Length: 242
Image (tube, rainbow, N blue to C red):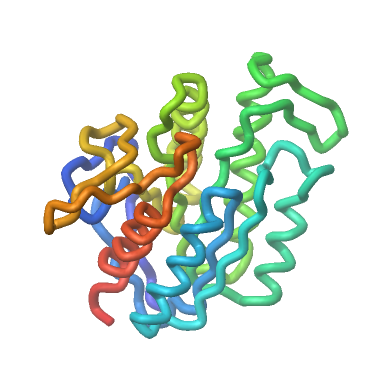
């Protein structure tokens, strides 16, 4: 399998019209990097459907999306992402995996031992860090060439934005560690439709000057317009040579 030389960095490379990548170079997936699997919480629901469509139009197949509304890494007794991921990897044998998680994790965390850590407790962040690390390593332990980890976009509400920044910081730190830095690629989908880096935008302008709704009225999730923009950007950025 062709090796992908990617170096994850922690500085935002701003200004890419089709999205911002946290990498020293924009990768182009080799043809062997299919099948493609997209997994995530409610952020992936509309996004995954649009990615399936865009991949199909670009003849990038098979490409399958799975999302679970209201799920996250902190409450395995409600929905166990680690168990479900094993099942999805076994069912689809993906070479490339896109991940969108963390939106719903601003809540109490269940540890492996069954203890509950309240959100905001000093022990919550290191415990959540372990959840993200476990999920990343579970992917890398499978026969996956590359993981694309979507950073959460800017949020409308200040408290939700603070959580999103925490999730993004932890993912960035973990992806940059030596054992992961060549196989986990961070992607800032928020830069596609934010007028200014790090700020929330409900609309973006099309090349024709039309206002397109890109975020859901809840101030958190993507609207169809935003999902389409991200999906098209993924095909354009990652599969240019197809």
